Length: 201
Length: 221
Image (cartoon, chains in turn yellow, brown):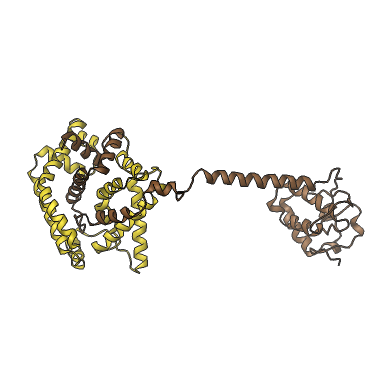
């Protein structure tokens, strides 16, 4: 099992002209990239625009990507540069990301109030979060621990196996079953809500 | 859908799938819209668990990027049409240029080397004070890192020079800090002999004490 093998296999396909593989990479990293860009711009809509620009730049630069670093590391650098350039060109000062936990709620509210573009999207986002959180709460303890250690703590399967004192194969199975359980609850809302929001957006 | 396939997809999403399996699944993922929708929901679940503030969980970015990329030429086609740079070409071209420069330099140096040069060692300190001009003082300072003596061969009348040897000799001595001693000595020898009687103040021939000193432009003082 090679590090970054998943991304690299998709990248190689894109380099051979498979655009569907690039869609998969964008789907995987769009949220992380928007969050990253939000270190520099407050407005989520603007952050999405910058993230979109970064993805397009990455696509055009992919023939030069040799896989010396992880794909996300490479993408990360493109996004940071794109965000910095956007901030400079719009004559704004970058903001610090180190937000006090106490002020985080007000910061979130500020961001939302500035983003008057798609209120439906915000409602949908809250709905998705609520469903995911509810589904996680309903999971058996072992599945919940496995998925949380993976997604929240970013541990590898091997690390989770050591933490939970079980084989790696069991970890893989637990994470998959946790995802499936959450996905079953999510699918109904996601399939209907997403299309509706796109029409509005 | 096949549960084993979904399990593989989950492991691939976490970058925990073997490389060979990744290759197969990547191919399927790029073509199977249902599988990609599941992949998308896995990403949404991850973002929701991380509670990324301000990040909207609908797929606006992905859909917009997909539309833009869809309108662009595929990368393989772009590379085939010559848009992608040929990486191997750059070092090869560099080596070819370096080899050409080296060959031209060697041929040029050989063409200007005077066989049978007589070696003399007139020290600058031996020059009468009245004959030491300002450029000579500058050159004397430049000599500190250079050789103690210059090769001054006898004048050869047959030699021709494109540029007056005095100017070239002064130039070479002034830049002696940046040239290797051997090359400098050979060049200097050539310049001295290519223009009879115009060796300049620094080029002191054994019988040159009677010649008037010349400045950098070669004019007699």
